[in-house]
Length: 366
Ligand code: HEC
Ligand SMILES: [Cu+2]
Image (cartoon, rainbow, N blue to C red):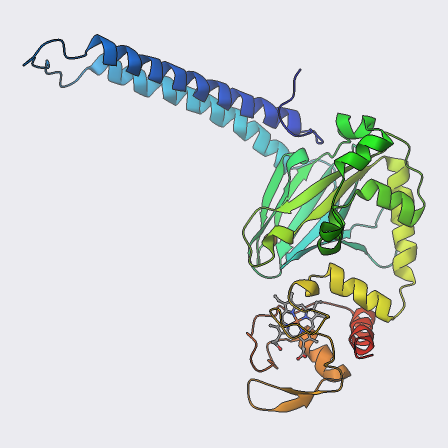
């Protein structure tokens, strides 16, 4: 059938399409009927001669009952159909794999359960802004925000769920590789993911991630084994809300396991370096508030501040050194740089990551 929706890439997508079609059909029909009646009445009851008096009708019980009962029945049907799909998204009692989703201004972080026999890892595998999923495997996304309200949204999955602080929200579904992605040729893929150099710099995560998986991790992905979709934040969350994009990459089981093992390996041997610090700066949202060219964005630029005195809002003067940077990252509200708003969210970076950021900031003085 002709599909006027975006690709369908999950088990519930066809059901959501059906409800959408049904609602469109019913409201479309109601629109036509009411407007046709309106036009008919305008003509039929037009004023025919000077001084004509309108007949007075107070109530008509039959019509009132009809226009109350029929819409109520229709709404009740829509409620039942919607409830069925909602239950599917909750899927209580089903088997699923868990993935923790953490949202913050303005980045996504995903933590995978590594309790499978095939991916054993002492440390949980984490990825930034790119969510890897296994095709045909039910997944449960357990989500929480570190600051304001965000909303996890992947149109192709027909999945949208608010991500808030203090409570966990969740959604379950079975990701699939959509027909279109499964059959796209190399050329078509290129055209589909055509993005400009500018966009690439600001939001690298919207590139064709299937291609990236092949290039970066050397995993062979024949046509039909990978689908890449965009993740949006669907709740206005501040300055860089529109850049809070990510990618959801659906892989066949084999390739998914290969990738998880590569990620495990990669994350096992991360070493402290300025390059890694730069990667953190770009992927963990620091970029939205800190520049590296000396310009003031929301917070101070990282360029040229290493070793310099920093005046704080409470009047003290400290030196920008390892300790100050560490404290600024973990407890940013305790020492606030003068002239800047006290809005930096605490960043839960680990030791290696903090040291790498320090190396990166140092390297910007050269
Ligand atoms: C929402 C905006 C925002 C984000 C995101 C953010 N910061 Fe900040 N940051 C600020 C602001 C504002 C200040 C100045 C006020 C203060 O000291 O709390 C600051 C101060 C700092 C300082 C002290 C700099 C100085 O010269 O005094 C460091 C270091 C720092 N941030 C590191 C980071 C790192 C690393 C990240 C990412 C992991 C990050 N920040 C993400 C807003 C942000
Ligand atoms: Cu957001």
